Length: 158
Image: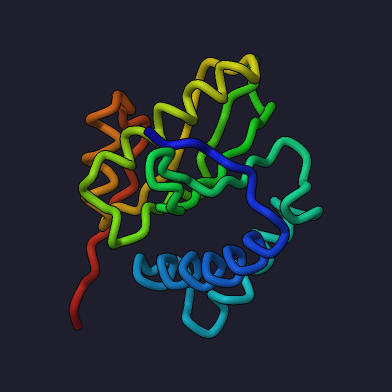
């Protein structure tokens, strides 16, 4: 089983650097951002969402720990947001490290997030998945997430 452990400041600094870069590249890959502006855009979004870093209000930045081995197997970042009639949670980032994939950590982590979110008095969890990330999409659907919106694009040649 996994346990969600709040990130330390050092873990957060390492996580932030890598995640900002990865997030920028995902937006370049999907054609949302030009490579010359991607890193700046990603930095701006992270700064907006995490103005106090790991201590930002209603933001939960966690290391995913395997309870049996004590190993760090990934990270997850979710928040409680209050933009509708009732508060909901939003998963901003979720990563199981490559060497630990396909071992059930993804499902266990999402279950742990559900438990934590219920404890916070929230009954809905949202997330975004890039269309090219079919593995993540399949995982989310396996554990009960439903598609609520689909954006599509076709790149034209010539």
